[in-house]
Image (cartoon, rainbow, N blue to C red; front, top):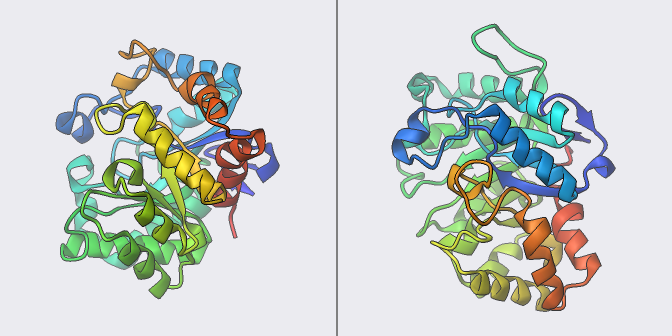
Length: 311
């Protein structure tokens, strides 16, 4: 079972999936930090989803978490109208992206109840109490000081406990300099299996295939979500990483995404790509580099089903 924002679906209903995207993000703290972090035009976001569906896309994870500009009612509306299943996210991002600063003051046990409720019961929508819309994944952001900052320590503990209570998977935002193995082991110490962890951004924060192999040996999955994000990684560098993953027989632990912003969506401001870029442009490049249909299906469908599936 995969929990999408407005209904649970059987895992086999999820076709091509991108596990770390942003299709709706209200203007707020994220926009103040970076003007690319705002997608609040309904018709533009809907057009992106429809183009994605037309190209063969069937599911995305919208990675905007609790208190950071997420709008689950809009995600549900966009999903129902486009035909694309959307998984909403509970948990937290970096401090600079929070609109609701009061969450920093909440006791750990209250945060656990909030995250658990958002997954199992419903998410409060526009101050009208709990809705029928639910999250299907948790998020933790490993800022550079995540182990020493008391607020991050509390947020991390709350996510780990909510994951244990609900069986929901956990995606982890990473930064350069993070000790990824330590993060994986930290969750293991709290009873969360590496198989429930999706480590994001390593293709741009730790560009080192040997390190990726070491991380994958724990049993977690990696989200290569910097495809065509050229200010971080060239297309050639991304392809080199994926070819090394293929040669190592590790395509069963990698998923592909774009980590979209308004600068990287055609219906907003991008000139050369949209949410459908992986389907229309990148998969043909993979085939040219010798990737089989089975390997592509693993990275774009099967692995995502396994990650998003509830225990």
